[in-house]
Amino acid sequence: MVIPIVYGIYKGYSDYRTFSNSINYANPLNLQIKSYFISEDFISFIIENPNNFTVYLVVTSIRMRNSFGSTAVITTGDDINVIRPIGPGSFTNIEVTLLESFADPRKTIIQWKRGGGNLTIAIDYYEREKNVNGVIFLNI
Image 1 (cartoon, rainbow, N blue to C red):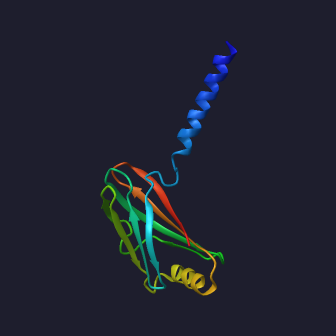
Image 2: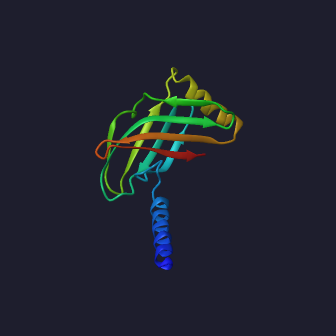
Image 3: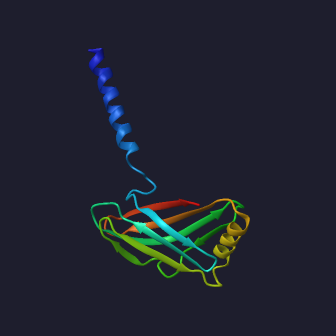
């Protein structure tokens, strides 16, 4: 009687652990950055959809932080808040021109380029059809 109960608890826990380890809660659609270009005037990311269904991606913001503690958030721009369909196994390019009014992102990138260290970028997204939010992280 004790052995079936212990086995049932073990089996249920191991199934839960396997399931919970297979999901990335920050990026539930498993979107990936394949390449990027970052300069003081322009940033660009190629994002891949590895799923077997079309994703209707809306980038809501791009957050960045450098090793010196400077942070910036981009909430407007060329491809921010624009619906981008990405087919299964396909790519899309997200581009933002950093105008003079984008002082914080420009400062954060300039400090990183001149001073070295790390630059962490978080691309916040919303998937329109599945009503899912997520974040794609890039550490440079």
